[in-house]
Length: 607
Image (cartoon, rainbow, N blue to C red; front, side, top):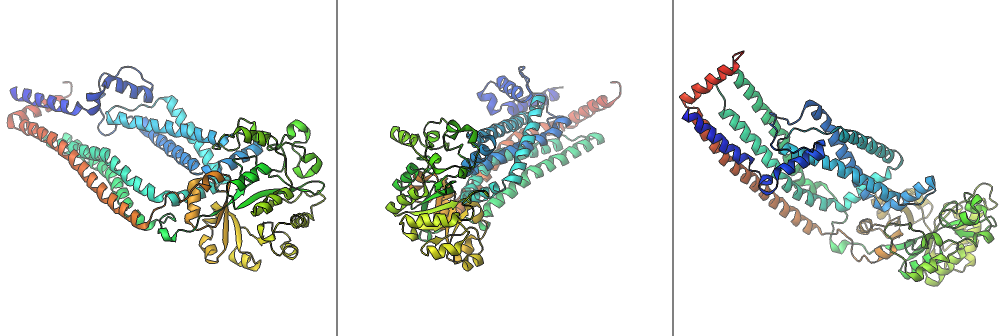
């Protein structure tokens, strides 16, 4: 009997050591567990003690079947959030597309970003709460409110994913470009993250190893109990492999991943190309109303090398500047002539178009065209309120005086328009009448190039994403392309053929840095003020520095991970020695016979 009392005392001492967790020492454990269970299971009753843990899983079969859906919702929401954050360069274009469908201008891109952020935070919270409850050996029970919300998250994220894959596949191209810039930093950060992750992994693996050893020491002569414990040992080993092997493989991949990665921003300093030139997109669209005299003058003031615009033809054959096919977004047509607000802008006479206000929407609206644009000064706000729709000849006059390049999209008039067949020649005549030097005109329209070359041989012709053969045939040495398509379609071939490249639309500093590191000659941008101030590409590093950081972090992380595993193993081995002493004591003949007698009594039916 004294032997048994000593054994029980040893077990109580071991139990006190196991339950003396960091949380218990520093916080009110009862409140902590009540909070976890309340958030996860909506059970806010006080949790006075831990529930007994099941052998290998701390939840019922139903919870185990639902948990993969929770993990799926977590990954879907995080992937969508990452996608939307990385495509921030396209927010204004997304808002414009939604405006075309809803006729309401708003920061829809920011709304979607907020929704995705909330969904990702919600699913992350549930996953973390489930992990903490498992850590504290509590049985999992996700409330059916949360289960319904998880299914809603999965359906909503799946729907948004389908939209992106079906209607906006270019979003995924932008993610690929962002990885080209951030790949070295993601690699180095991932190694640091694996060091932090090694702590719970090491704790769990060594805990499983200790539990397996303890079960071997507690084995008895009962055949049925021995078989049961052998099965438990096998499951414990499987769990160790399932947890430890992926961690090891991921860590090894991170150690060697630089051999298979390429980033344009990792290069020698003497090989870095000159800073790209700038074309102000519709002027300086963040500093003044787009396609107005104020916007173009602001672009000149901030050092733009060229001016970009969009040209429409009025009903009386006057070329004017307007991007949209109607006048709703950028003029006061709804106040002046609401019944004609949906009418194509080319079906108005210039006398009427010249009376419309093209700046109040920019100066007075609470919702600006760009989410991150700076507030206007009092003088600029007053100036913007008085802007009108300009003619093409007014833009050419600004460019002539400032000696700036001009590039524009020339929109063909609708079928019933009187200038439908002659708009190219009409625009060429206006340009020649303006007396601007011909080499300042970068001619983008693809129609009637032979006529344009005869009438204006000094124009610089620019193509789109044509093949090298097409460009050579048409004698074109410049291209104007969407940045998303260029990086995935022959950038090296264009550079090898000495083709001058302009990409649009580049607003984010990280994307401009990628363009710079890729030796592209010019960009079209709305964010002229910010990009003009960048004197060196962001995220740039030399190969030697990257190699030093790579090798240094590999060695340092390996040392830390080994130290973490060793420290946890050392702590667990000390506890294991105590258990082995207790177990060896219980294996003496007298105590063993007493234990076997107790087991026989427990297995006897009716006792």
